[in-house]
Image 1 (tube, rainbow, N blue to C red):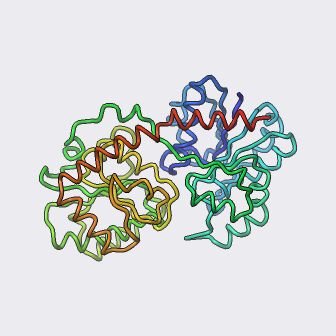
Image 2 (image 1 turned 90 degrees about the vertical axis):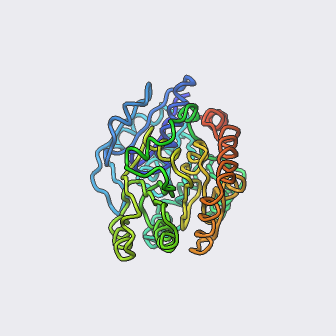
Image 3 (image 1 turned 120 degrees about the horizontal axis):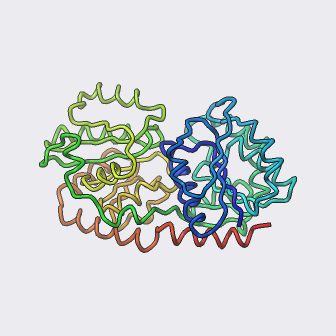
Length: 378
């Protein structure tokens, strides 16, 4: 098949949707399919794109980034000339300029497309009015004309239904991880040595975009109370700033706990795996989350996890960690229980490794995606 993947940005620091488009393209290409990715040059990562062998990645010039709506008008002419050569189109994210243009040309030339919203359907947290306007002018048409839509969880499937998508067009398919990256884990202690963390200090890890939707401010507030009662615990915050770092640092300064917190910046590849391996617990206290891949990555490294019940992945955490309400007291109690019980940490860690290998390898998920493409293609 000739497959077109569409995403408005192509940089791993942008989040899980980029990682999904990357892994899908990599595996589909290895399976013999002809894969092209179209994106923008907005923060385009050339090395990341070049690491995709036998995949054509085309970054179109970004005319303007309008409230994160990345406008790429040069893409229109290319689509008018090339879209008819593809068998199937896969749209990543929901409210994008690229999707609005694809909807027009796909309908014009009769090319089917699949939409994967990656948790972006709800109008929450910010820009609610702009999201509503986008939906009125473009969003509902994008959903209406999609041959299939991919929901990461049952919750996201309900969100599609609430926006008018028929149940028979909804396919629930989780994200995956590249199991080959976790076959041979690095030795414990490498991350500690790199960042000067003492051997007797326990590590509480947050890894993700530093955005208020991730709930990292709740974690800092909780850790402040916890740190006043407990010595030899370090909070490590790893990830790129997504507009919330200065606010978070102000909170830390106000709470006077800067000496107990380490910012590493973004971690990728082996550096990320080393952080997970050395962490005693990984925490994702999100305000809203659909399917965070970092939880799977922590599990693959044998690291216990704590998530809020607002994470779409909370239903699989039962035997690999704790699910708590978005509440400081519950979060603190879960941290204490894990840090104080080595056998529990080991049990959660072993369960996590088994879970991801049984259910979340990209090879299995991409085969399911391939069947969906075959059933949908022109």
